[in-house]
Length: 211
Length: 158
Image (cartoon, rainbow over all chains, first blue to last red; front, side, top):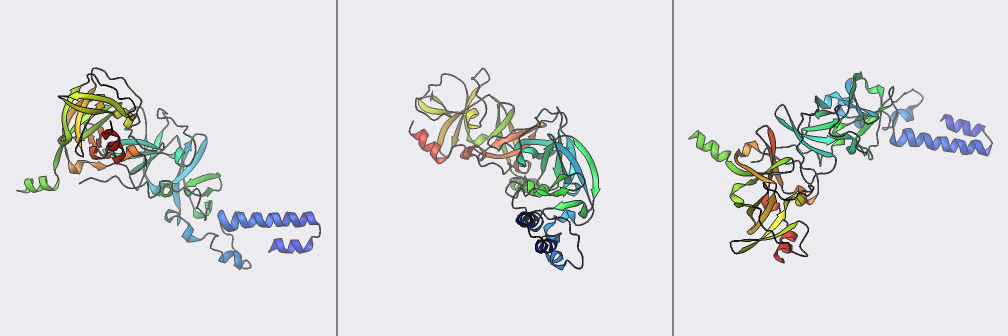
């Protein structure tokens, strides 16, 4: 709306080009892929009705109210994951025996046991498309044990745990690419990972007892 | 009575365990015919890369598979501990070369967990399951999946 008014009041072709660019940028950034938290006003009914702005359906179910996140390091990057999806954090050290299975993809580090339970270890860094920087010998390795699928996301140092509100995150609506990125924690500019999407359904089948 | 019922619903199977690299694998004892020390293995020119060669087993020619290569593990020269396990899978008798043979263990069906369903590579299909044994994990191999139809056709041509 403001962009249109400004367009009418300007005459120079540079301004027109600049406005065209800015309008496109606004549409691309907030209207299609990356949704900002809605700041609704009564006069802006169009924006308020747009499903892309803070559409509840787009939020993961763990993000409906206040929630805690754990910040963890992967190489030089810090990511966050919701604690509601993490049931335990285990430290991986020299005594952690990892059984490597043949024929598995690189991101599948192997199997290990925590408290008598067999856990599948996934290299978080490789899953998000990076290169492995955490070696199997890294003494700061941890595994975030997920609620579902008996998976452990291997990461580096555990940085912090913080309580957030829904509005603290810029949620992504279009997650056709990088589906694992639920959004960005605004004050830390840190990607909030959706663990369930990080290990898609095809990978997340539970270990089950054979009969 | 109830014990018999439990045995039927949760049968016990015996597994021969062997070592390859750092891991321990198990194969169903019913498919193991015998375990041999490594003697002379005659190479077969033009054979697939996973074939070590052939041996003469009491007048029968048996193909020996390089299990390390099959499992995408680094190669290792056979040594004193190496063994050839003669197995029967899908009516085909083959030998599998392993680093060593460990023991025979009994496992209840309820103790075996399915293999992680990740990986599309060929070698992933014959991991039948995993189980905890003596504080370690034992990888159970489905010998009927060890060779696919193409492999069998290639071995028939040797």
